[in-house]
Image 1 (cartoon, protein in one colour):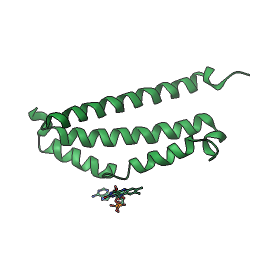
Image 2 (tube, rainbow, N blue to C red):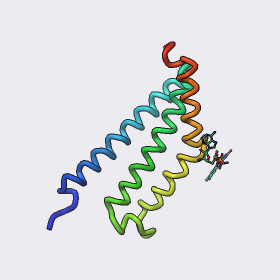
Image 3 (cartoon, rainbow, N blue to C red):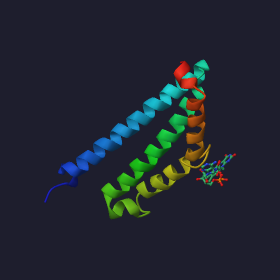
Length: 115
Ligand SMILES: Cc1cc2nc3c(=O)[nH]c(=O)nc-3n(C[C@H](O)[C@H](O)[C@H](O)COP(=O)(O)OP(=O)(O)OC[C@H]3O[C@@H](n4cnc5c(N)ncnc54)[C@H](O)[C@@H]3O)c2cc1C
């Protein structure tokens, strides 16, 4: 008898989605700043931003489909396409497994702790 957005379970989901998108945006800006300055930790930040933002895009679009139920799934509405588009960002430009290897190598080489 009331809009699903009035339910706390849905509100928790929306808050989580908004929080993750903003965290991904901030990490992307942090990497962009390092790229402009040519900072030593750019490799770590570039990999972290690509990985975190694309994983976030995937999680958030899967949840968006869930929130919209059947309408989220059908191709009549744009959200299922957004979910499929999010998937490729985890794969191209260096898969997220490979980005994690890049980050681990930077950590093991002590680049982060030097700065
Ligand atoms: C729509 C689209 C557009 C593209 N555009 C371009 C483009 O413009 N330019 C370009 O050069 N390429 C492009 N690509 C290719 C894309 O970059 C590759 O698909 C991507 O690098 C993954 O390589 P692969 O498909 O050979 O997968 P594989 O390398 O075979 O990987 C398969 C799986 O194994 C995992 N894996 C592989 N090695 C390891 C490892 N050592 N440790 C752990 N896991 C591992 C991967 O993470 C992945 O999940 C595009 C691909 C698509 C689908």
